[in-house]
Image (cartoon, rainbow, N blue to C red; front, side, top):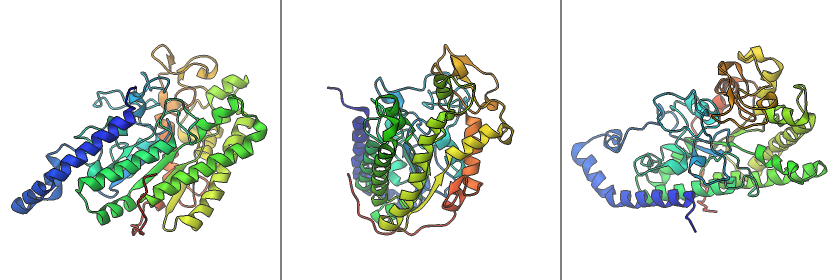
Length: 403
């Protein structure tokens, strides 16, 4: 049986960590003899192409296709892949396929840019010994997200479920400790200053198209939240102290949903009710969980639901013109066929809210992220992302757990 890509990546990073342990004493001698700065020494290992301006040491990304930076490129079918023309507006300097389910930068990229990074940290499964070097210093971070995945293990056949993504982060932290490039106290401080970003939950609603009756929605959503908080608590135990959660978009307004309901463009209230139910319960239960078991955690729940709803209600607010039809796809509202090279493709992509039958455009994501950082509580609560990142945190001692 073939070894899963996630296991291969974990093994590779562990191997690099072991090599760095062996090289550690030599590196110390180099620093002592040359009195060179740390950055000068490590620059020889390769340019920090994902690095920030130094304000935030790292960013760790978990979730689904709204933030996937290419992990699914390394997964076997039936895991979905962001084939061209996905990435059509990504910078020309990037020669490889972007792995992003949009026309340019995705939500993780744009949030990272607000923190001073050039883009999202690299997809975990793309890491090589060279590109994992800064990760093993507690810098830059990694993107564990997988398009099509969900909170529940049953969601997203062939993708990396949230449970496994958190486990991969635990393995990453263990590798950093083994590498010995930073001591335990420094690592915990670096993690406390880093941003942990999660976008997940929408794909789990596929269960209602596959036999789960809507009458069971309250129990189903409550189960999703229970599992979600369990994984968030695990990240907390592993050192997360700044957490940004993206709530679920108004799924009843997606081109795919408009095409199914036969609507003339009005959002489906039934689909939106699922998003509202999840988003409301997430806020309630997250507040309780922080008080009960995660002291010292700062968090923000950024509202994709409200920012999307605002763009749909008033497109000009975000400089958009088309908020019902996808830019790339086929069928009614371009919501019946996925985006491929054979699809129709709009020329004026910055005018569109939706890139394809599900995902947003880079333009829409930029407007939403601006609201997450600088908007009122309607856009992000209990604090916005700018407030989340504005003050240093001291790391409260938390036991390491490997799940």
